[in-house]
Image (cartoon, rainbow, N blue to C red):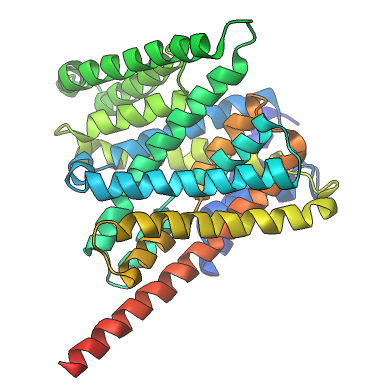
Length: 394
């Protein structure tokens, strides 16, 4: 199929499915995933993954993470750094550890595959959570702030772990494990030093120079140069390009240009590149042999929900929240969404997981993302009812 017709088909069907998804109360990204499944080999076989779609989707995921960093609030993260980091860390350890034990000890997966199954379940996306918090008037609570801070920390932890894992698996020399780790850690430390220095000293001045230019849209161009430049630096230092893009967004978010750039950059990403990324995930799905994995998928879903709920809830409880409030934090971190899809895609491309497990992980991601808002609403309502009863008694 001609590449122009591929774009037409992807964007047209993608937007229709996203609209239908939104109308029935589901996140639009689910519509894009379904689009890929419908037009791909799994159902109608209108499209198959191509080199053209691959490069388009790579730009899409870079843009997605750049926008996430651009919308980040570093000051808020620093204010709640202790509970947020604790919640994020336990929210990674619990699902990753339990998924590893399940896959390795129960289903007899090899160590590499079991570890990456766990890593996929460690990812969190709070785009849906934020919407639920807004709908229920719960956006300005302590629980809400901890969830948002923990989500940022969770993304960073997850991306760093993914980058380290890709490097470890990609090493084929006979060097010792300590040598491998050292060869990775040094460039990655160098990456953060470079990013910190560039972000603090160069990014604001670079944006200022482009802002003074008389040509059209020079400021968004500067932002994209920074985005892809940071992504390139990350790759050269052995890190994931999505981490570089995320750091670029965070660097720009600390400048005076953040408010002007966000409305300019988001349409570029969300209009074409990011939808292609999510639809490309669906194109990779096949249902061949899925009937043999039903028990495995059910077990992963249980671990995915309980791992985040318990891990993040316990982390919140350590900072003097009551159990009702801690459960809200846990439920707010259950949703996997786009971050899990990023991890799945990178892991598959790097050969870290087998194609036969790809569909199972996609289904786990979709189902947990759908369960998350329901759990969050239940726990918020319970806490609100409890507070109302206490007021009546007083």
